[in-house]
Length: 317
Ligand SMILES: Nc1nc2c(ncn2[C@@H]2O[C@H](COP(=O)(O)OP(=O)(O)OP(=O)(O)O)[C@@H](O)[C@H]2O)c(=O)[nH]1
Image (spheres, rainbow, N blue to C red):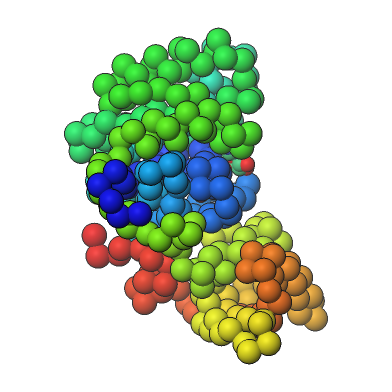
């Protein structure tokens, strides 16, 4: 669609780690484009999905969680997240209402350390938006976990910061309120030809998506022993004449001991990861997948600039 009735723009979805950003992007787009796990900080690059609402195309920037940077890689993540917000036509501030309620709700629910961290992160994001002179649509998420009357005080509190232009209560997981959010976003998009072909649900290169799927399986299996010290890169992605696809990936770890953990006894752990990833990739790509995994020790991979590029991070800013 390229006629003058079309509209198209960028929507940055920002929020603390674990607020539900990936879940929301998936709901808005309608396909699995981003990886959802229980573990925080799973989003390493701004996976974008394309949401459509009649004649409006919305390019969603699923920003990595914004938090206080510790290492270089973390700083790249933060810069990348704010970069998305600055360029966007519209910003959605997604807030875990359950965490807010636990901290500010007068002791009905016991707040965890993660809840306190989430509230601090939201305060930091609000400050960031203030200093960037940006307004955001506030989407209070996870409302399926609480009574609606408890939400008003939280909404009020955030509204009074002055950065909120609209408030919506949603459950990204159950889909409640997501349609309303989509309509609201669609209204805000500028008149423009579509930037992506109609059938393109996500522009995240399939190689990166494939790597994220393997990384998700890796984390599911070894998250206790190997918190964040691993990266997965797709080194080969070849369509075969018989309709199957051959995918080669390297799992980078920082130390020999970590390599042993990923391999497992007699290679069992790696085998499990490969099997689960292959199954999911097969479903996603809708054809047989031959997956080959290698584990490499690369000391300080997280400080390796060449790898940043593979994640799509803008590490120069
Ligand atoms: N009950 C409930 N849980 C939700 C909802 N939305 C997301 N979650 C859960 O919250 C957790 C975090 O969701 P993600 O979508 O991975 O969060 P994220 O903000 O992308 O996280 P990072 O990638 O770490 O920044 C997952 O366990 C989701 O299932 C919701 O509306 N209700």
